[in-house]
Amino acid sequence: MDILIYGTINSVTLALYALGFALVYGVSRLPNFAHGAIYVLSGFIAWSAVNTFGLNYPVSIVLTMVVTALIGSAIYLLFLIRVRGMAISEIIASYAIALAILEGLRWGGFKGMTYTLPPFVSGSTSIAGVSVDYQRLLVVAVGAALVGFLWVFTHHTRIGLALRGMAQDERAALMLGIDSDVMAVVAMALGSMLASLAALLLLPLGNIVVESGYNVLILAIAVCIVGGIGSWVGAVLAAFLIGFAQILTVVYLGAHYQMVVALLAIILTLILKPSGLFGQQKELEERV
Amino acid sequence: MNAESGQRRRERIDRGIKVRTAGLYALMSWRELAYLILPRLVLIVGLLGLPMAMPGMYWQRVISIVCIYALLALVFDFLAHFVGLVSLGGAFFVGTGGYLSALLNVKLGLSPLLCVPVATLLGGAVCTLLLLPCLPLRGVYFAIVTLMYPLLLARVIEALNILGGTDGIMGIDSLPSAWMEQYLVIVLVLVVLFGLRRLVNTDLGLVLRAVKDNDQAVRASAMNVTFYKSLGVFIGASIGCLAGACLVHIYMWAGISTFALDFSVLPIAATVIGGSGTLVGPVLGCLILVPVSELLRDFGTLRIVFYSLILLGFTVFRSEGLMVFGQRKYHQFERWKSI
Image (cartoon, rainbow over all chains, first blue to last red; front, side, top):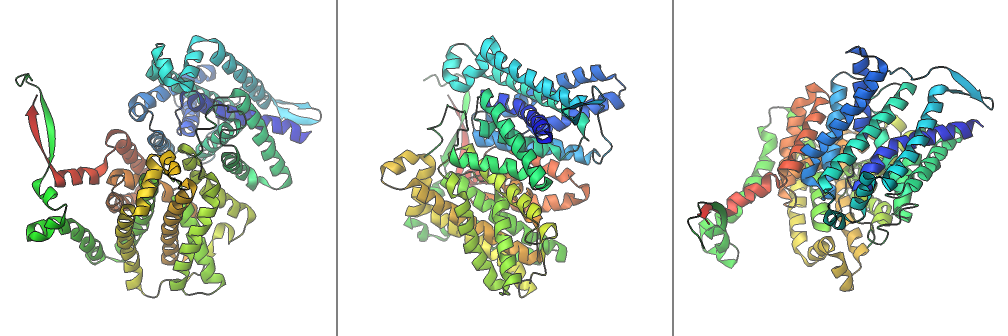
């Protein structure tokens, strides 16, 4: 029972990490390697909004999400727009941004155990004999709601459809009057907002540490690659697959193996089925 | 043909001397010979003379580290711009070569002079074997896999507590003399640099570049794309492992930090700054970047911020790099022309 409940929570956590990355990469083909950095950054923004500026918690949450969305679009408008379409330059540029943000935060003195956000709801309950705190339940609920919302968003709204159009055929989308740069800005803003939402939900469960930025990025990439690009079903399924695999290895092998699972998943998927479990597009293109 | 439109454009024309030195006629005069030989001579003499110009032991050690990074940057440039495989895994090569050489030295008791070449070839083979399954992949996927391998290996060593675990392998012999330690890596950089330049102009290099530009055409010529890619990776990985093996014997220690991201990121930054696709550029980039990051060591992680910002700036705003710029100025002149 332990495994089932904490596996589910871990899986939803992974899905939350990955949603923003999946939206930006799967939908607008922009590998945003600054995703993990934005995640950590928004944690620190929320922390300083609460503790330095003394705002109350709900206000600072909204503020954090707005600021993060602005940062995301600024990153695109200032830097990534110039290297759009050159996949390697995109990776190098966004990874350089991530390094600059994370190491800058580390240098700025944000390290150690002292930075924590308060949970939304405190207290805990027990499900089938396993005690679970409310914040973790909230994570699961919000995660599930978010996946549903994103599916509806990308299938039934104009902006969402435009985003998917860009991913599938950029030229055709351009001919139909979809401005690719505007859409990429929208995608980056939404993706960053999702990263900050994930940060606000998950960071109260632990401390804000700079290192988690790198781990979040790796886990997000793992979920997206295993699930297949541009497929929400695949992403959710991959999150559950990796999430349960991680919990099982932690229980039966030891905590050290948690990241090994994610990294192995990436490598094995790329070797065996590079388009992922559910990625239908691009299967033929990626192999020589 | 309105010559008086008031608009101008800049026109670039090859210098006469560049055209004259392209063929056998270069041998006709000292001036042409100097035009060809001088830049190369400056590089060779400069690199060989560098340790003597350094104030002390510390900076001589920095020069060795510059050379290690230069080897890695050469590997990145060779794989990315002549084979078409973007490898973000410099650390993978360094770690494999380093650990292999350390094991050969400590467990089998071989001398460092034997360990280094064996680790080079063996490491190249191991890396190629591990990367072989993902060679058919195109584009960013190879980059992601190579980025993940060093992280994975570091975690595996940590988790299984093998190969010395988090403490690393200690008590590795150093190279026979300090003099040799200093010059081995410098000579290796020069040999690899000029060797790779030779290689990319041979028939094999032509095929490798064809794999990068149009793999379907290579396939249509009845050549096995994956074979040539793995050959390219073997050459690159061997050089990377060589760098790792030298590093281990210089530090007399091999540990998880040989898989650190520094070995992946800094060579790429150096290549971007120095000028990608020139092979000389990466060496130049390392000569600039490593000492600067050494000077900034007092600022802690700020130096990573610093060089990632340089990397970002060069990737986004000046993607040609210093060496391409320099070569253009050397070979061509510019003039304004009204249109």
